[in-house]
Image (tube, rainbow, N blue to C red):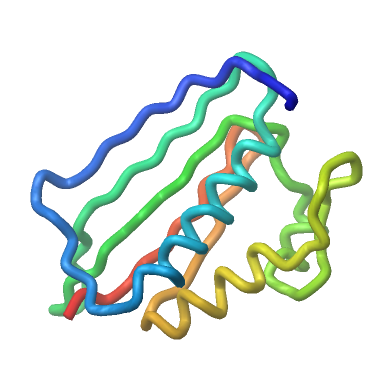
Length: 131
């Protein structure tokens, strides 16, 4: 087992999120996003997970964000990340299906996943409509 020293910060709304769906798709999305973040973090890195309500056009959404301060993603690679079998990892396990599967699961839940990246951090966000 590879071990690294990572600081994990969490921040969640004080009110519970009520989502009417099977837990497995949401669980798989969270596992994939956190796993991707961990794969990018080096020793001494930071991972932040936050959940909050988001009001947008008279609808309420659950926003779940996973942010890491890993190596970042090239813009050329970023264009391919939601396509099947695309991965920018060369030395780690994975065949490039995690984000593709997660995006399809998010769509089934009425949501979407977006990535925001700069040279210092990557943030994955999933927004799901709350019923």
